[in-house]
Amino acid sequence: MLEARKEAVHNLGKAYDLLHDVYISVNRNPDLSNDPPSLKNSIEQLTDQIKAHISEIGLADQIHLNDSQGNLDWSEVNKYIGNL
Image (cartoon, rainbow, N blue to C red; front, side, top):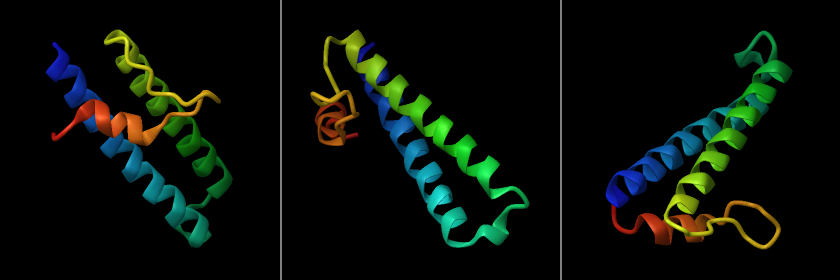
């Protein structure tokens, strides 16, 4: 089960990276969408949900992946997933 959770976190991290790239592209070129504010808001919500899921998966293994301010600590995430 631990390996499956690590794989899930790894895949969620990849999804986060892709959405972040789209978010940056939309900010650089607003002509990519007819409704950039709506698209940006949607991407922000999705990335927040992904980060929350990553944190919850870590907690299933009693690993805290958030920093002291409650933000996801990507260095801790990378330690958790190891060499996948």
